[in-house]
Length: 359
Length: 246
Image (cartoon, rainbow over all chains, first blue to last red; front, side, top):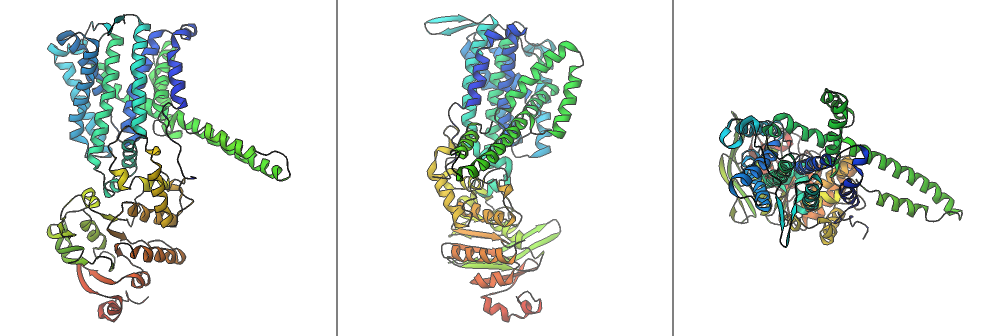
């Protein structure tokens, strides 16, 4: 049937490339003069940004307080480990539950808002959570945060694995990351994800074709918070601490910048690209100058002004350009075919376009 | 009893009264028209009838059921669909996806967050057939924003049709269309008229009088005249305001 759309696929090419690149970092990262911990941190931010993009890129909900859920996951992981039960699975699960619950509560208060009012409320809620983390000394440790969060043993039924080393912890987090990315990919391409995209484009029409817009927006916020909570818990494991800084307004702003620079508005993978770019800029530019954020900020301004579709948008434009060039060539080839020369050039061009589909 | 009945509707915004003791009824299988000068309250009337605004007073029933004050999604789920005067499409999506998302079979699976929507080829077939009904075959893949004005008007109706309504409200479907496109639209609406109950707000009297079984004239938020197009041509107010001279 000519109208049949291409399916999303279970493991699309960009996902395989991303997972393969990350999985092999222990073999080549050190040779570039970098260190394994960097890959771990990049992955944590990638997960945070990809989950956040379910709100910003998919549903069109601009949140500037998403650090609250990331932080909630980090603190919950540490507190559960130190005060309730030091079991890795229990603490991880608990961290996700706490962040999700917080997301559900905040979402219930703001899901009926749109645009600038929505954005302002997310800032307000983000600041409230940050303030609580700074001031509630007896629980959160105040400005110092929670120290000495252990990297515990990983119980795997018959055996246990020690996660103390960066490499072991990296592989553990990589498994969680891969699982989370697959789940996110499925969500975005499911009927539910398509409804979220419809709401981003036209909330009024979505209501008039019968969708409960509030409930969908609320679910998007809540699910996005769950991913932030998982990323936060991974961050607590990586840093072996949890501190209020990750909940601050500028930290919440970083994830927005990652998504926009990477191209989250036009691509599922944009946020992952943006997170990589951000952490590399921080470490590479940061090694050269203390004012790296100034340069990064200027770059952000330039991007938003001239390339609002981000790095992924640049890539897509290049792909379109190449496809168009291939079509032109095929058209010329077709003219030659009529004279009996190069059959199949048109098919090749179409196949090429299909292979190099949207990023 | 009429399929859809509104009795004694009042609506005010601030100190401006837009609907005043308005009563309308639409018979099953008929095409009813609503006309009137600019600012007569036609679109507000539609907005109240389809749940966008709750009336201050009055009652709306559909198929014998009281639907007064229900939100748009509940009204839509009952089988009432509408198109918009100012186009309301999912602009980034393809024409096919615009229709797809409005299909009841997709709506019922709206909270399915796991399976790929693209795997449901029966839904895509159905969406494609809705596009074919409004003459948009061949444009399935085009993004809604890239369609021409006339095609977007057709898509606007396709999205409303996709919901498989019992009652279809069309808000000025000819707005901005040229004579040729208006002619094609009249054919389409004439075709739809045989399958479902339709209510049309329209400025274009030739278009409306050619299609409608009955027409209500709205002015200052009240019905000032109602009848068949033939009766209304004789109506003094309609003649005087030159609304009726095509």
